[in-house]
Image 1 (cartoon, rainbow, N blue to C red):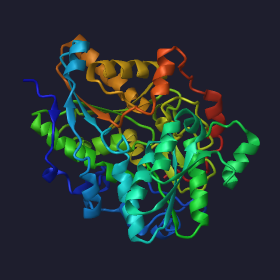
Image 2: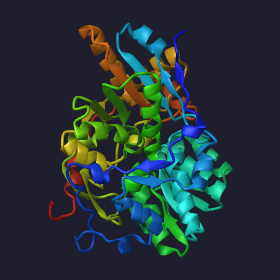
Image 3: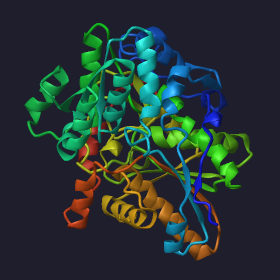
Image 4: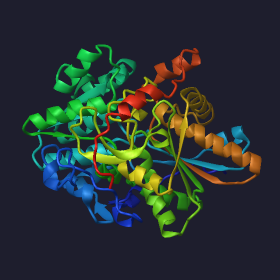
Length: 455
């Protein structure tokens, strides 16, 4: 019998998150204060984050215990299942072994609750009454709305306008869990009003939505800000994915030769590959390939310079060293809204700069072709975001067919596409199109980069 699923007993669910910071070959470049240009201190971040999360952002501890209150809610859907994609392998006629870790079985339909629950818990413990955030495709906003309902914290979400219009059911999901969802840019904030005055039809961006959320959080007492990707503590919370997968791959008597994942801010894929990359760093598995996949229309890793930039459009956040298209960049309205971010997680950027991970950019139409093939073989309708890494995983499997190599490919699958069926409909009806890399727009955006020492 072909075993297609690997279930991890709940008693073996990881009780600690893995922190890669002490294992990095070179220290992560410091986060800089936007006013002074000096490294930020914990006190600099207290207006928008609770101290527990600030401490995790800089923690030297290799493992950080998951609070029991968070573990108990994790256990309502975790551990998630590791699948062997036999039907996809057969369809491709490849000798490669394809596995995928599927995060679409959480209540919110993605990996995002792994950090949403943790962030709500720590905020609740420090007396936060209200959290403001942003969301692109809506997965993060949905997850934080669910977590807010479970911990009794009020949630407000600024949703990128183009996704707000494209994905109404994500908004309804947030409202069902009790959150308030508004399109960004909005008239609620100075940042939103400024952009609307310049362009009333602006489709929005994650950078702009972050600006609106940070501005509101910083101006109101008992309100904090929450981010669903990019920052170290978010990557940390997602490592439960990779820690589970390591045990499940042992059950399958397999070890990946290639790990593939989509990246926007980077949280899902980092959560999968960080527990594996320590084997590459230590020299145990030097040939392990880790491939980050991004959209051609918003290719920060493959097209952006490695430099300091703001995480938001208005320049309210600390300065992060990352591959960036410039914080003023308004990306084309590709349907994979979770990947439309001008920058990338500093941890992923640091590893990419050291040559420990790879990056590829793919166009929108081929990604949906891959999503259709995956749906018709494995039965899962994927969100547009993981369709990007499905495309690259399929390409790698077909290369194995050419070479005859039986490599093991592990896919980090971030969530389902049940609220993205209009995107599939647009593809099936021939209305979906590829968006060219907007070189002139990026050139103007990069001209606005802050002038800081390149440490």
